[in-house]
Amino acid sequence: MTKINQLPELWEASKAGDAKAYSALHSELYPKLFNYALKIVKDDQVADDLLQEVFLKFWSKRNQIGVINNISSYFYQSTRFIVINYLRDIKNQQLKLDQMPEPDIQFSSEEIIMERESSRQLKYVIQTLLNSLPARQREIVYLRFYEECSYEQIVQITGIRYQSVVNHIYRAVQTMREGFECNNNKMVIAS
Image 1 (spheres, rainbow, N blue to C red):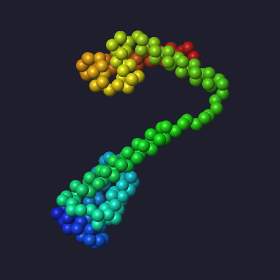
Image 2: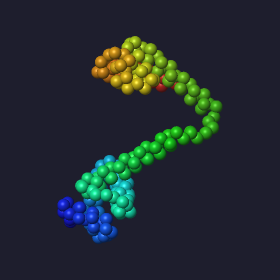
Image 3: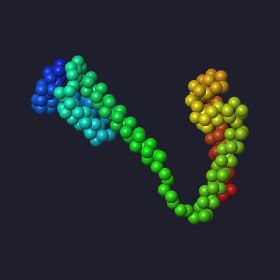
Image 4: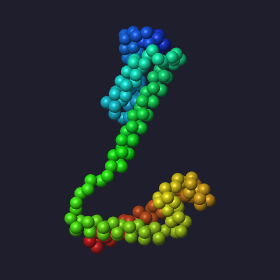
């Protein structure tokens, strides 16, 4: 295996078109870069594909790349950039899938009525549980879950300390969870 201090020589030879030098550079850097990419993407095949893309881009654009002071660092940065782009693309694809309309499936009228009744009961239980919370907890839950405010925004709006906001939300969620369990048992018995 080559020494790390030979990387600049291997890079310069690679830039001149020496495929053997590039192969040695690849052999030296690939295992470390693979482990780095794998820790982020958690998929062997994806990590390998992304690294192939990194090395292919370097080989194809080797004449356009200027002086590199730290070859190893430069490859790590390039790997990180490719991995981040991959993750961004995956996230965008997932968002597109999430935005796809639900298939238009016809249900029987009984199923539709049962679904509406179940939804109506659930909304009633949620509203009842929310109304049973103390006013401050109810306000904070509303801001957090209905208005989607961050904890910091709630602190600014209400003027109470950050930890108090966290405590109020925790207590409200606990109270509502207990209420759901109690109401869920009643709904099952009534059915």
